[in-house]
Each structure stands twice: as structure tokens, then as C-alpha cells.
Amino acid sequence: MIELQHLSKRYGSKLAVDDISATIRPGMVTGFLGPNGAGKSTTMRMIVGLDHPTSGSATVNGRRYQNSAAPLHEVGALLEAKAVHTGRSAQNHLLALAATHGIPKKRVHEVIEMTGLGSVARKRVGGFSLGMGQRLGIAAALLGDPHTLILDEPVNGLDPEGVLWVRRLTRQLADEGRTVFLSSHLMSEMAQTADHVIVLGRGKIIADAPMTDIIAASTGNLVHVRTPQTADLARLLTAPDVSVTSRENGLLEVSGIDARQIGESAASHGIVLHELTPVNASLEDAYLQLTNDAVEYRTEEVR
Amino acid sequence: MTTATATPAPRSLDSIRLSFPGLIRSEWIKLRSLRSTVWCYVLIILATAGFSVLMALSANFGGDDLPQAAQNSMVAQYLTVGGNFTGLIAAVLGVLVISGEYTTGMIRTTYTAAPGRLSAYTAKALVLTVVTFIVGLISVVAALAASIPVFALNGVSPDLSNPDVLIALIGSAGYLALIALLSFSFGAILRNSAGGIATAVGMLFVLPVGINIVYSFTGATWAANIATILPGSVGAALYQYNGEGTEAAPAVGFNADGILVLDQAWMLIIFAAWIVLGLVAGAILTKRRDA
Image 1 (cartoon, rainbow over the protein chains, first blue to last red):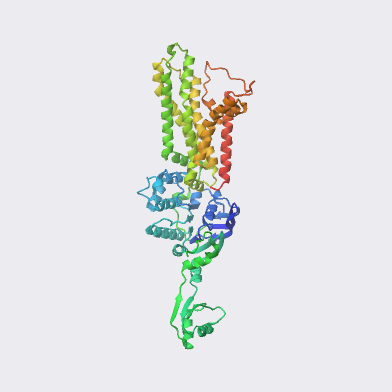
Image 2: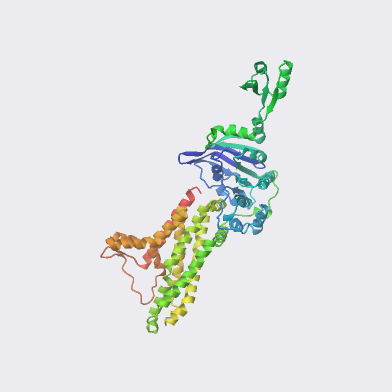
């Protein structure tokens, strides 16, 4: 379990993380979602003590990570693709890391096999592809058999097979009762991996909810209705929690009422419908909507 | 924190602990698993041996006519003069051991495994110093083995059981180790290879000479006095030969011309002060900065 209490981090005049509080629970995969520059990595770095919080605190299983007697057994962290000396082989990197905690060599070979690094383990890391570096980072995170995993953009640079492997691995680790906290800027990736989502934008938490809620909220029930009698239908559907908007002539966008009810009302009042389409707003849309005001680096619209 | 559905972790890993001996082992693996480190050490041994042979070849005067004390002094000084060059290698190595971790991002792995940081910092400094000292000793042995036959051709044969000779030779290994340690502190402070190497080489080898040039042109005594206390100048006290036939220690203090004069003990004290200052500054910054 990871607990963030009023955590803030200021770099010069920029508030990278702005007073966030959250609890990341064991036994499930918690996604940490947000656009680039939202403060995800900074938050993760503060949890493992690499960055000092400006104020507030982050604890892992009730205490600061720095006070753990076996940090690698407490938290396995993949923070950047290559936090590895480029001149050293993958195997020596892991052996050096294992030595700090007296982790047996057998375990080093285990994680090398587990992450599919067997054939390149003796090669220098400098020549690794992004995907290989990512696998080595995951191997290092798993080395101490940690209760908590913190993975910053773990699927970055992985091939489709690797992405699938990370998805299964995080699921399995969570099912074993561990705390799994992983970040991504891709909603679609999160939708397939996470049970719970914390959305961060400009250093603030925008949403902290189970994935099912986020999906339910985002798919809403927007319905496209095409009818020659738009005015009649709009009047008919008027109710406190129903909104009807007209984008173009003959087309209504209705929300707050589902397609079946619209169809039945229209039929009972003799209104002709040319189209009746439930629109599933994609998760991606929902995410963009959530973070729309909270994007740090926005691309200018192409004219 | 107990978890409801946890499958038991591999039993062997439940008892793992972060420990200082573990950090020492880790730093030893790191040191020997980089080609650059290994090459630096090989170069130190080859350079020390090679230099000693060159010097021995030049010792073609006096020979049997020289008193034993002079022969001892000659060998001790000829074998340690290469320290000016090998010290440069040790300095570069000392900086790289820590700055290389910052430039590659490895430092984040190091400090995630040992989040207290200072234990890892200490282990790294200790391993570097001890290994460099041992390599220094090996260099001295290699230099003796390579040069004694050459000295013998010129009729010079030192008395290796003479403690003054041994102290100077072992001191040259200590000089390498402490130069590496001081340079390590520069690397830890600057966290950058180019800056660290420039500072270390500047402080140790360039500035003492450069400032003396200033002095020779301007006669500014303050310049000469600064050069005297720079680590590169005072560090040489470590391999100073004090055997029979060397001059008596000078009077410590400012002489009539206002020039600072130090004896060996004061040089060692000032050298130690540089190292303590560097290491403490490095430790404070290591603890306080974001990694």
C-alpha cells in the first residue's frame, strides 16, 4: 500500500506536483494516468526517495521508503528505461544490485530468464534497444521479490508481445496480493491493465476512481438521432436530466436517456426517425475530456 | 501490511536485508565490471613499471662508488617519480567512478537500492580507495621487478629492507589511492564527468604548475603560497624519501621572502584536510540533492 499525503514538489517557480493525496491499494493494478509533464514521474520518484518532497509525505506500507530495512524487497521500481551504466553487462548490473541485499545469484538468473534477457545478459547495456532496456529495468524491479511495484511507463518501447507480457505480469502480481502502481499517458493501455485509475493533470489529481466507473462515465449515453421533426422530438424528450443539442440540421445529440427509450417515445408520438445510434464515446475521448484543461504541452491545431 | 490473497514469496528472499557489507560487494562488482576501470588500473601498473625502467636506464653514473644511502635514495625517488603521471590516471578514475553513474542514470538504481545514500557513497569511496591502493602496491612490485635488473647493470642496488625506502614506495601507492579518493569527491560534488575531471586534474596537476609560472613572472608570493597548499603539491609528501642523506626538514612558516614553507607532516595534514573537506561536501550534497 502506498499513501500520498498532501504531496507537493516545486522546481523553481514550477509546481510539478500540487498537494496530492491518494492511497494505492494492494491486490489490484492502479493506473497513474496523465499527459506528459503532469507530474507522474516526479510523484513516483518521491515515493522511492529520489526526489525530496517540497511538502507532504509519501509512505510505503506505513513508513518512508528510506526507513525500510530491505528497500528492494519493499518496492521494485522501474523509473526510467535506462537507469543503468551503459558500459556494464545486464548480468553484472543485476549482480551488483543483488549484492546490496544479499540476494542469491539464483534469483538473478531467474529474473533474467523471466524477462527474456537470457541471450543478451552478458552484452553491454549500451547496445540495448529501448525494449531490451525496458526488460532489464523490469528484471531489476522484480529482483527483490517486492511487495510493491512502481512502474513508470513500463510498455514504452516494447513490442506487442512484450506489451502483452507486461499486462499479464502486472495482473499476476496484483492477484498475488501485491501493490502494483503503473503510469502511462495512454488511456487505451490503462483500460486493458488497470483496476483503478488515478488521473493527474498539471500536478493535481483530476480523477481517482475504479476503472469501471471511468468507463461508465465516459461511455455516458450519448445518442445520435436523425429526424426531420427535430423540434417535435426535442420538445418530447425534454426532462430535467436529459440534454438535447443540435449540431446540424436534422441531427440531435441526446444524452441522459438511452436509445431504446428515445425510439419508443418517438414511435408512440408518431415521429419519424432516420437514424438512432448510441455513440460510445471512447475511453480516449473521456481521457482527453478529463485532461483537456490540464495539458502542459499542447500541440497547436493544424490549419 | 498483510495481504489477503498473497501467495508466499520465495522463502529465501523474505530474509534479505540491505547491509553495508552487501554495498561493499556491490561496489566491488561495479568497479571490476567496467572496462574503463580495468584499463585505468592496467595502465597504472604498466606506466609505473615502464617509468621505473626508463629512470633506471638513466642511472648510469657513480655505480659502485655511490654510498649505499645514495643508492637507496636514488631508487626510492626514481621509482616514485612516475606518480605524477599515474596520479593523473587515478584522478580520472576517481571522478568517473561516481560521475559515470550520474551521467548514465545508474545513480538512481544505486540510490533506490540504498535510499539512505550515504552508505552507498561510503562503500563506493572505500572500495575505490582500497582497490587503488592495492593496485598501487602491485605497481610498485612490478616496477621493482622490472627496474632492479636495470639498476644493477649500472651498479646501483638498493637495500629493500631499509624502512625509509619501503615507506616511500608504499607511500606512492597511498598517494594514488588518496588522489583517487579526492577526485571521487569532486565527481560527487559536480556529478559530471567533464567538470569533475577538469577540476581534479586542474587542482592536482595543472594549477600548481600554472600558479608557479605566475609567480616566476610576477614574483607574487601569494601565488606561490597558494600553489604550495594545493592538493597536488602537498600530496607529494606521501612518497617523499626521508632516508639517510636527505636534507633536514625546513623550518615551517613564512620565510624572510614571505614564502610559505611546509614540512612533510604539515603537507600530510593539509592533504588530509583537502580530502575531508571534499568528502564532507560531497556527502552533504549527495544527501540533500534530488537524484
